[in-house]
Image 1 (cartoon, one colour):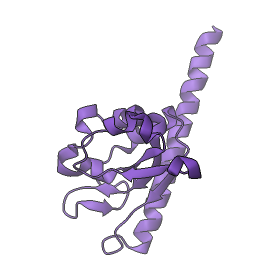
Image 2: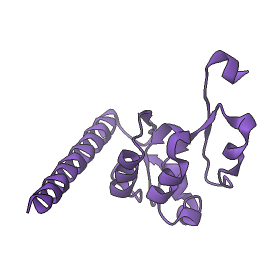
Image 3: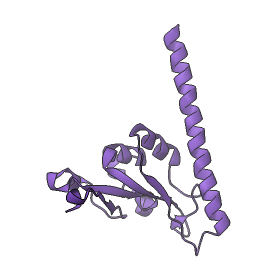
Length: 151
């Protein structure tokens, strides 16, 4: 039915999901993954540990990754906290998203009972700055690589 309508249905990852084998079935061609980044870090990262890192998980998902909920996870108030204040390895995450050429949405999913409106704005700025820093590092690596090839 989703295929007939030209729709992809995204299934959200929870902390106790059991892998992505279900995506490989031909009948599942119109299903994708909504990666909830913070949920991957609950229970000591149990959800991404089979892949080694959050980046390897993202790389294994590839084009089946169609949407993301972005927040952090850390001590105290565990889930849906301000981005950049917890355990999520955003360097690895953003690098892997770049590698798979991710084009989907990254939606901030923050708990308004824990994160103030200013904290939401900080999260947005922090994430944009982190992405900008990564782009600059990629440009620098590309320039160095190009210079090495020229010699």
